[in-house]
Image 1 (cartoon, helix red, strand yellow):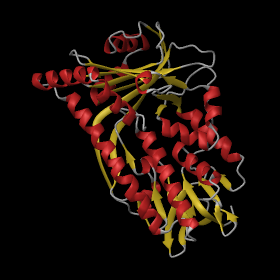
Image 2 (cartoon, rainbow, N blue to C red; image 1 turned 120 degrees about the vertical axis):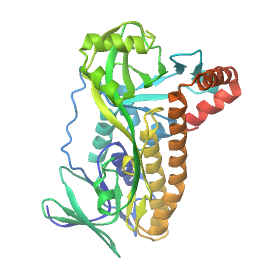
Image 3 (tube, rainbow, N blue to C red; image 1 turned 60 degrees about the vertical axis):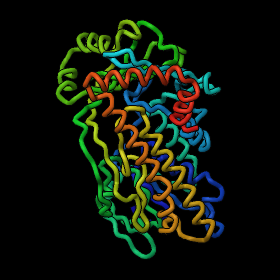
Image 4 (cartoon, one colour; image 1 turned 90 degrees about the horizontal axis):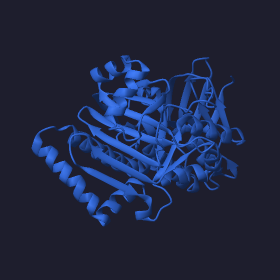
Length: 407
């Protein structure tokens, strides 16, 4: 690969990195600098191969809020995703395993067509990369491995494993929780291990899910049933995310499929009847991470490279997509003023806009997690009464659900 120069380079071709490239490239004002389109490159270390989803769902799914869905619509891929398979859920039920606390949300109560959409990660990535292939000013370089970088007064010099060099005015790091860019540019990280693992898989159930997302809080961690829908309209499938203490997760993974399904039916209080089929299970360690700073001159962190949170409410990718929207706005603003896409004025604005919101969401999720882990009787009684009271207070409940939907 010959040495090349770009206006913007993105490390990572996952959901956040691909969405940033597609949105930046399709923004009319943001793609103009002295009458020329911004030249954009995406660096992806792993060869991308779309999994065969003809018979199985991708085990990793996301619960898209309306702003995230709108982002995908703005870049021109939402109709493709929806036509393949995306499940709009209209209701959500949350209850506690050892008490009477119960709360229900319904999209009709907030006058919305749905509370959100459950979509497979692989479908989002594939649709975004197909879009990127049609964009003349975006190059997808894959597989390439970033080995070193150097910041200069003109931008960032990126060294690749094959010996080639790329220069750019802005390096946007969307290379995940183990971000190589974050490590190389010395951005510090605060993190702690939850001591939990999430077991994820897809199940087929006796009863239809009725477009309802369900979450049950168990003593060892929450269990979520996220509704899926096949191309033929079959509504008997759900993606599960079962967060368990590490030792419990290990023992559950050691069970055979029949034993695991029996344990899952009991943990979910048989809310969907019998589990009649299950796909391969995966176990993912859960950690909370947050970069002390998101930016240095010429470099900005996005998505999991900047922050990861507990999957309690499925907000991780939605926070990443909000990073995308904000950084595109700030690049657009900078270029419109004749500044570099990586100007520190623009990157500082991006950090000031995103960091408080991400920290606030992380604090709320951590609070919920700790609240439902506390087992003393007074705490259990208080949270059960609280959930039941909120369920009866329509205006308060509707305010909560609208905030969760990003409205």
